[in-house]
Length: 86
Image 1 (cartoon, helix red, strand yellow):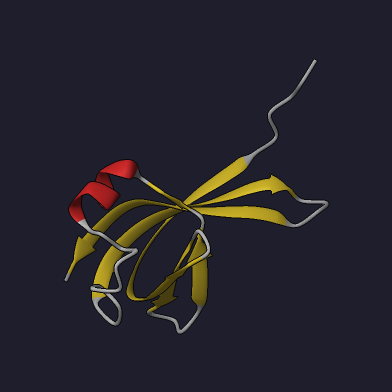
Image 2: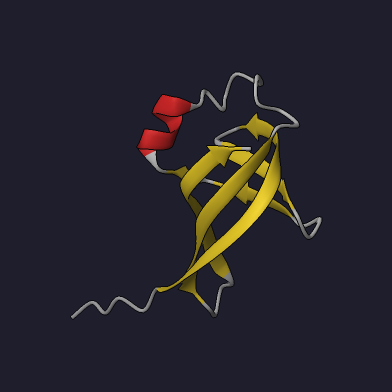
């Protein structure tokens, strides 16, 4: 039997888009923390071509999930659920 032990936390912040590189979308959040998001809601990518570089240094309202896959391995995924240009 496989058990799902993932833990998800919704976090709301503002942040500045830095880069898209090798599958990761990097943002500098309002607390100066830099996060690399590996998952983005597909509807966001329809609104904003984040891979193009056109949104570098632009400020966004961000709602994202911190998904802990394994506490032992410190395996965490960050997923952007909502993104709005400010």
